[in-house]
Image (cartoon, rainbow over the protein chains, first blue to last red):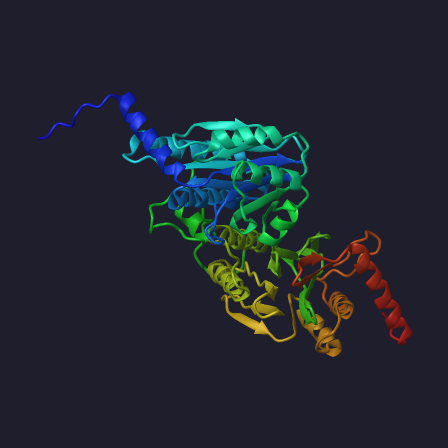
Length: 225
Length: 267
């Protein structure tokens, strides 16, 4: 019988974290930002069909970065969780906090128990009835949940981008200004992003039931002008 | 509640009913024993749908009966199934309302999981399967016969589908009405129907159909001017499902009565 080598738990966790971080850093980052009209989610995505940002429920959206198949599986599980809950209880009983916690459980479980951690970072956003009541939950590859205020950045360059967003962000920012700030922050000082390369969605506060809508390239160009 | 995760290749796919089944939440179906239910059930009655130039009009009366008594005066029987389709119910109210809620969730669930909406044909087939699954209940008297209509974005036309208790799906050319007053409503609409009519004419024809049905059928409610209860009317076009305001329906009812009087009829 072969004996496995002893590896210190600290080392094991560190190796897994490094592995996950490296995987996530290969893709582009993504921003979720609360504004006057709701929550705007923006990220770079050259594909028009493989979405990073999607609808979960009436007031809840999902965004993921990292490995597509992994976060897409999480997205589907989120849709299932929300639809079952809404059908069993009531539509208003579906909330982002409970969903974010469920995600954290799963991702944390995989991180500690499986050989390979999930190479994903996700954002669960819920638009509130009034500005200031929006929620943004940022869940990392190890299952850490952070309840972010005003905006959240996920992905490899999150810290640098968050710094840039901080400079432009103010409370009660309009949708167009929020989008401009987000795209500027994603691009950085010496780069321009073509509107066709962006994936943008909005959780619009004013929409009656399903708040989620995608902003197509033509509208994006208009908002960014 | 934990997150429903499934191993790759073994998930319920985009089907919500299959998902309910997989997580053990599907409603138990009683075995067919034949005979009538031991108690009086709530029933919803006349519903109509007709095509016009830009889409479809759906309408339904508001009365629910429990045997000979009126159980509810303001029951809605016309629902938005999703953005471009609607479903109207006749038959046992309890299972019918349940079916509508499941159907709405099923369509939305598919749309969210797959990222695209089902075709109108696909939605109509889904509803047929749900009615088929209700067959054991239907054998015990809990019959649900909905009417499904929607705007087919791929073909650019409004379409109407009817069903029988076995889940059989039939597409109607121009209009249809079901429920205990369905026959009277159908005849009324047939007499006034022309191809490519305008929205206003279509709405008037739909409420005329319901009015005549209420006149002949005790289980169909007519316009209740005292309480201000009027039929539910909705249109489905390329712009989506839209309820017609109560005030507009009330006004059109007024006009309808005036017209009948002017023609020398006794309304």
